[in-house]
Amino acid sequence: MAEVGIYPVGALRVHALRALAPGPRLIVLGAVHGNETCGTRAIERVLAELDAGSWALARGSVTFVPVTNPLAYQRGQRMGERNLNRNLRPNAAPVDNEDRIANTLCPLLAEHDVLLDLHSFHSPGEPFAMIGPADNDGPLEPFNHAAEEEALALRLGPRRIVEGWLETYASGVKSRLQRTSASPDERAHLLNTDPSYGVGTTEYMRSRGGYAITLECGQHADPRSTEVAYRAIRATLAHLALVDEPAPAARDDVELLCLNEVTDRHHADDRFARAWSSYQPLRAGEVIGQRADGTVLRAPDDGFIVFPNPNALAGNEWFYFARRSPRRLRAQGPTR
Image 1 (cartoon, rainbow, N blue to C red):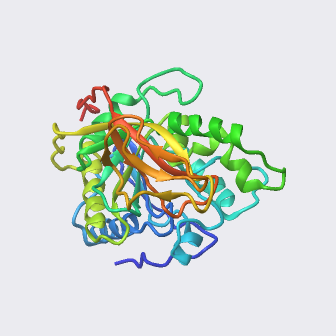
Image 2: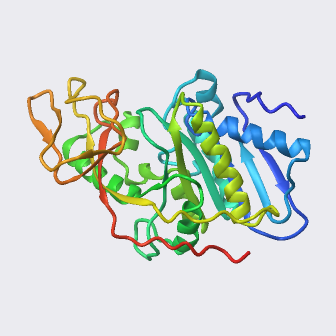
Image 3: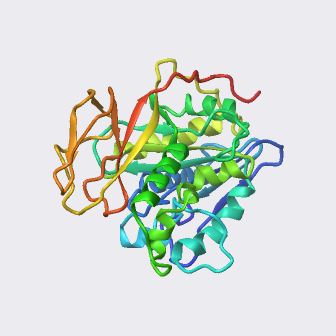
């Protein structure tokens, strides 16, 4: 079996398979954030199975990138020099580690039709998939592959599916711009107040004509998150008919939520009222936290707290608020 566990800084280790029969082009990413390693371990398991002859690619192609941010991975932390999953785009004058990765990663993404991006999260909670918008020709995230994306999301395993990321993030940027200013040399802050800062791997993939899903597989240190990631890879291969295996059934018991609001942490002394878990239910008026100046933050409606980060830096996202979505997901996928 080939050694797959060495990931030097300064290069992306890419494993590519090309079948002789035509079919979709899939790319699977792990460790976009360096401390989120469930995708890395799951990809390594799949590659070991491939080397052992446990399965074979029947049509199309699949590309695996076990560690997408080697510097962050080596350091065992979320970022190398900044968040790779924000402001992702080619840069003619790269100034940091993530800019340099983007200049290799973005063209690689553009060569594919489908992206599965494997992540994990800090707070306790169950796995969930994040999808893009409904088909639209609007200015923020025009898209025309919603049906294919929905069909794949319904087959990845988790029952919870979430939409609304980029629109909610853009609204948060508007609020941030009204509240803050920065000198030209404060690059991190300027990126954080750029609407395109909300663009990560999946948003970039959609902008290049493909479709994509972020799968949050579980808590960072939970070994079950690796199993969720592994099963999702195998389900994706089967659903896209890249392998000669039975197509997975679509879940019919999903909970679809829509992100609606993002709240920034203004000061290091802003505090949560309790230790929140992502997607923990909230009742209208329930106290979420308190600002350093004494302002109490309450839930605007019945809903859910999402991505609560007690260690967020001042000026960055502190938590999101989600409501149940009326959108109807379609289980019909590509013709096999």
